[in-house]
Length: 506
Image (cartoon, rainbow, N blue to C red; front, side, top):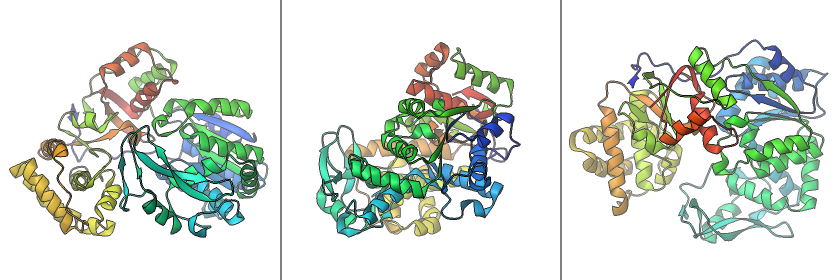
């Protein structure tokens, strides 16, 4: 595989504004109170979502009886939709109470209504919450093993909210002791996880469900849900309440691009939900992304379940794989943007070092930097101002003296950046950290590198030329034809539909 030189590499591009096709016009202007818009890759999904938002907001023939609200499941998708709406319709489109927000923000509004109403009682009596992304950097928050105890939210019969301990069936980050999480909750802090756990418990009460429907009638007249196949059981329960409250509901998504079953999404329940609620279906079958015979034919084969095969990658702008480890095992001209989500202080220091490298070589930040600075107790502003100066010499040492010396220097460097303590050396982890640094050292001496991303980070993006790491199992899937009902097939489908001009196997 030959990467494009740095001067040749365009950045990932997003869809630009397009004149609407007939299919897009019909979808955007549909008068159906419950509508599903199935959008294949590159079909102008965000364009249509923005158009439908504006029509619901301003066209009296389509206007609902309350605020127009659009939600998506990531900040990046939410920001992109907001940008499209503002560009197309102007700032009046999102003037309060009309809004575009993440699904987690919408959930928080529901919970805070129930707190103000007195239906639920938050620790410390708070009726408004400060929402943090997660608890990284707070005392007591740590990785928990299978069969360990974890504190989760609980709602008593009287509406009092507390935490209880549960046994874990899979590893996760969390609090094992009640003290640290209790004190944080009493101060009015929470993360989206606590909001969701509380609502999931509370919705068992018919009275709470009635109160929620009452709130929704005034809070949303038309709800537009982007990437609906990322929804989980709680999300669907909320959408059910919206339907019961006579809120107009528009779902937009693609069952082929449902990737997040591993974090709780239930894509298999979305279609039955829509059938039960008698959603009208509109399709956006035409893709503007695929501009060559190869990408057009491949997209057709994948979606129809026909056998397909990939040529070897030659020149690529990005390398995609299922896991970070697989990307690091590729040719040294692929520079992955993460070693994996940091689980300890040394992992966090490694993430910051990688960020300095990717910014220098790719002009792109590494992933999980925010989590890393929180784990280490370093201020974000200080890292942005001093990170390159403090950690750049570590990269030079890595090339000159090797991974062991660089790892030791890295621990000292993050202390100089303000880390609460020097990351401890754990014997069982040292070999892995050194191996990761050795892999990074190989990238530092390449004439040119391209970014490596997991398929999950690549969803929603497109490039001209994409290389995809295929396992023998992936090759067998392609040869036998893909099925949208199979999780692994959907991941492969998303990976192979990011390219405008050509896609090849790595």
